[in-house]
Image (tube, rainbow over all chains, first blue to last red; front, side, top):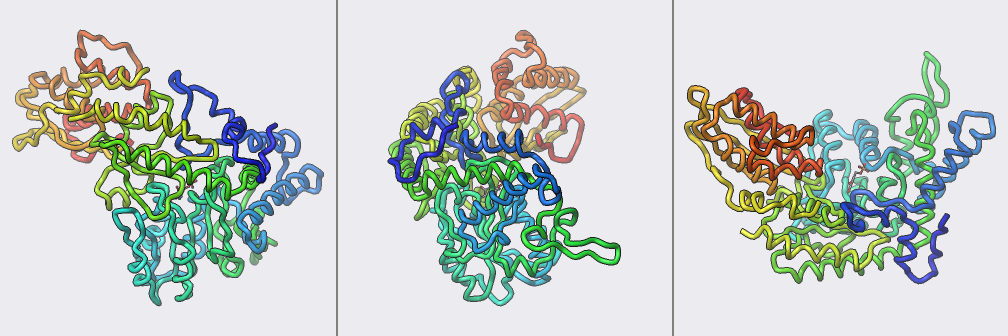
Amino acid sequence: MNAPVPATAVWDTARIQQDFPILSREVHGKPLVYLDSAATTQRPVSVVEAVRKFDLTHNANVHRGVHLLSQEATQAYEGAREKVRRFLNAASVREILFVRGTTEAINLVSNSFGTSKIGAGDEIVVSSLEHHSNIVPWQMLAERTGAVLRVIPMSDSGDLDQEAYRELLNARTRLVALTHISNALGTVNPVREMIAAAHEHEIPVLVDGAQAVAHTAVDVRELDCDFYAFSGHKLYGPTGIGVLYGREALLEAMPPWQGGGDMIASVSFSGTTYNELPYKFEAGTPNISGAVGLGAAVDYVEALGLEAIAAHEADLLDYLVAQLSKIDCVRLIGEPAVRGGAVSFLIGDVHPHDIGTILDCEGIAIRAGHHCAQPIMERLGIPATARASVGVYNTKADIDSLVAPLPQIAEMFAR
Amino acid sequence: MSMLELYQEVILDHNKSPRNFRDMDCASHKACGKNPLCGDELDLFLNIEDGVIQDVSFTGTGCAISVASASLLTEKLKGRTVTDAEAIYREVHMMLTGESDVDPAELGKLAVLSGVCQFPVRVKCASLAWHTMHAALQDRSEDVSTE
Ligand SMILES: Cc1ncc(COP(=O)(O)O)c(C=O)c1O
């Protein structure tokens, strides 16, 4: 098993790539160039091994057995929770809820906080940069309750209009739901400032951190956010596990979302008392080995160091933007003031799906489509984009591989 | 599979200059097809008299595969009977899903679409026009979706 590189070591991408055996496979007879980490990151051996070790030696249900395996499983699961707490610098493990992913985290808030605190005529502010998973749950809530969705507009560059945002905040606003980094355009939102602005009106803020946690250090106390959601599979961890951080006072006041085992203190037909945090929000048997894998993923990125990761990726993205800008017919979609994780582009009027398929023939994996952010596409008047996104294992050579065929694609499709 | 095998000259040409790319006022049958994943959207028009397709055209936007497939469809079906059209529809469907070898004599130029079956996510693009045509023949008025 490959131990993660200590944070003090010099950055060595070749060494990091060895932690990801999938990167040495071929696709359509060509070496794989993986530039789709915004969709899902690849998993290092240490994560796969942690899950395997748990499954093969410690597997049992949590919080209920008196036997040793159950105690070990509980320790592993709660150990992962503590790792996540440290990773986010949350005050207490009571604030760390394990969920299926970002989508479930947001649905938990919209169902529990939303239904109890948001009523007819109340307003929920979202941004025009949101992923569908931070739009649809709020639309569903609005439909149920008669609340109104207000949308922060964005500029052509893909930056949110901060003045318009401040004007949207008012006495009826009950929540701001905001992405930290846009998966479609790579915009890094000034979330700390935006949270502070909402707090001036005592409005809580949910941050969708799906695209942020793998690219930048997140400190929920420094951000002062009220909810922070992310998915394990975009942080080099497994699918089916994610996290909702919630400020303890808010979580305490919120009703449970799902009912069942584990979330109760005692059940009787004359009434049920709910378990304490975080278990109140974890009904049923959780994804135990997924949590263990997520804990190993947190260890992995912490060993590399979030600052080193951010520097490595900023370097790659600068290079990618520079290389793309050299090609005449390539148009960058979104040129945000601060970029993280991804770059969207178009080539002439070639449909992004054709770009994606041609690159796939060359072994290059990118994403083509609307990136579950159709309102952005509508705003920019395009059906879709091609998107390249980077991770710890990418190199400038990967970017050269991506950029090399683009002029030829343009020529092939030239009208 | 190289990119040139999938994006053959015929496909690039039909994408660049789609045939019968126009509205039809006097259509006896029409349908709208959508591929939500790609955002492909096309309207297909047929003018059928006495069981014969007198005219067929389309409008819309999409990737090269879906536009070329629609363009090739219009070329193939003009002047054919509705019964022929349904038979061709079935053959194309089998070709795109890789269920049978193509009979080049029967499908002619449409055989250039056969490479698509190696790209499962693109099969929907190539089949959109055909499903839409099928729906138009059935006189189904609701939109067709490949989802
Ligand atoms: C910004 C953003 N939010 C939310 C999600 C949803 O994450 P998941 O599908 O893991 O729940 C994604 C995934 O693409 C995303 O990029």
